[in-house]
Image 1: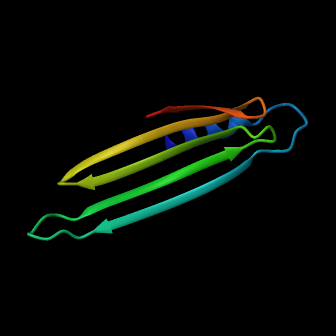
Image 2 (image 1 turned 90 degrees about the vertical axis):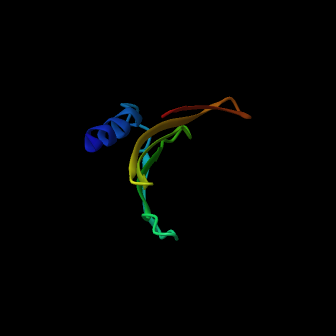
Image 3 (image 1 turned 135 degrees about the horizontal axis):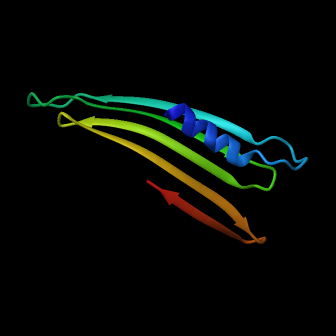
Length: 95
C-alpha cells in the first residue's frame, strides 16, 4: 500500500507538458528513547517523499509509526504547496 501511495504522488506531479521531470527527494529517520522507572522505550520511524515540479509546486507524503506506552500510532500525511501569483502560496494538508 505504501508503494502504491508513493507511485500515486509521483504520477500526480508528472505532467504531459514538456517541462522537466519533477525533483523527488526521499528522507527517512528513526529514533529510540530509553525511559526511567521501568517504562518501555519509545520508538519511531518515518519516510518522507517530497516532489517539486518546474512550476514550483511541491507535494509531499510522510508515512510514520510511533510506539509509546506500549501503543502504536501509524500516520499518513499528505500535503501540497502551490504558488498563487508572485507573492502567495496555497497550502493544503491531510492527515
